[in-house]
Length: 122
Image 1: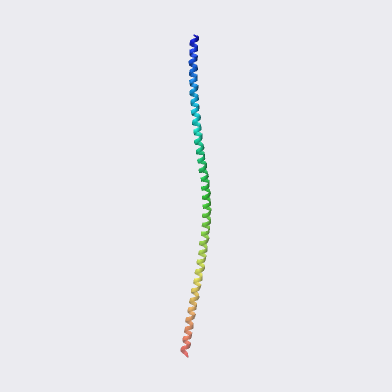
Image 2: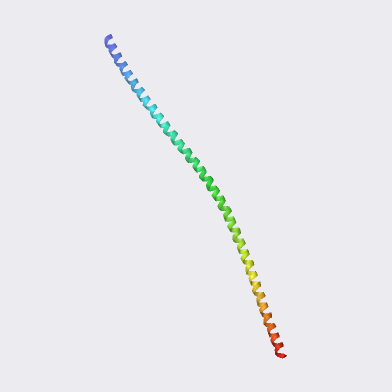
């Protein structure tokens, strides 16, 4: 009976050792998988950091472009306003010049009549 008991204990011990070896192998495989996943996460974290940095640079460039556009729009509005004011001034000047010319032409015509009349009476 003792022999049977020793045989059974031996079998259980062998099963335990086999199970322990399998668990050690599974643990090693899982540790290796964990290391691989950690490496992949580190690579992805690096890419994410690069993407975030690029996004920040892009947002800064966009803000700068918006500011330059606002300045350009303000300058364009000012230039348009100044051009309209200059156009109004030139139109007034032209109207005044036409009036002066008409007045001068009328005066010349009057003088020619006077001269003609004066020359005709002598």
